[in-house]
Length: 442
Image (cartoon, rainbow, N blue to C red; front, side):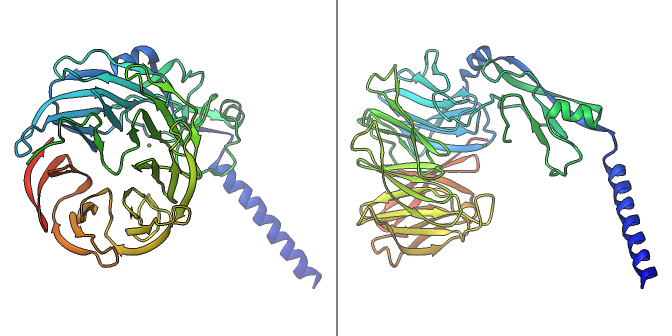
């Protein structure tokens, strides 16, 4: 019995020695690392060059759409937006491109265009489209999570580590990367990056900074309207004399009664993560990956929480018509694991929203409505048109297949839809819609 016990102890001890040897083989005292360091430039000069008005250019990646007077603005993700003259919706004309790096959203009132750019609020006077003056920039006005300015054309390299060293995010912008192989001992590594490399870490590249950590995110609108119209995926919304811009967990609020000199008001922190914004009168409906959040803006400077409707994790734009909210949930991807579909939420009691009906969909993005017609961009499954006169029994009126769909804007006399670098326009009929024009932005 003693011999057996001694043999077991010997084998166990040998196993520990073997494990230590294997560990040393994997993580020796010195090893080679691919380390990326940023190439930088002056932040003020970089931002000044990030805004320009040019001739039309080819689109690289479709973003959101916005309609104002006889114009349609199509975002080119992080690069700016294309300007289309939509006086004749059957034959729109591409008249220019406003380069605005770091941009996702815009909103317009009385010929003043408000846009995001690298965490700043940018104001442009577009009263003369052929002669747009230099932009006004309010630095660090929005997007509190925005800590580092990286050029729109900059690609993130393959590297084991990103060493920001003495990089000053308040004064510098990243315009490229230099990647070198360096041999570091464990002591040198820990002194430089602040942790022991012998501790197991993920296969993803590690980030190091003395400042922070980084993540690698028929007719047109009547000319009488002074405020434009965005789609359901918008994060900007103008209501009267106020601009609301939502980010991950807060609402940035601006008093724009003086259009050229917006006044920054106190941010309001929300009850959950936020992705989109929509209003019906003085009520805001905020869509997020966990639910829909309802805020009262009868006191416009201080949105007040009313209630929320919680659902599974998914991407979640929302539009509202009367007593019902229409929420598309896109799951089964980076958005989350909730079943994709349309949630119709009963709002008769704003303090207690309840699910009225669920309709499964393939992979929806944005949506909109015009009277009793509901338009849903079901991703690669095309555009779907429903009769919503009975929310408990939606009827499919039409299904435009074989197109990729992202978001819609229902105008008074026609429907705008953005797909994969293509703008589609449809004319309304009593019980259907018909394709009016397509415009290729490639």
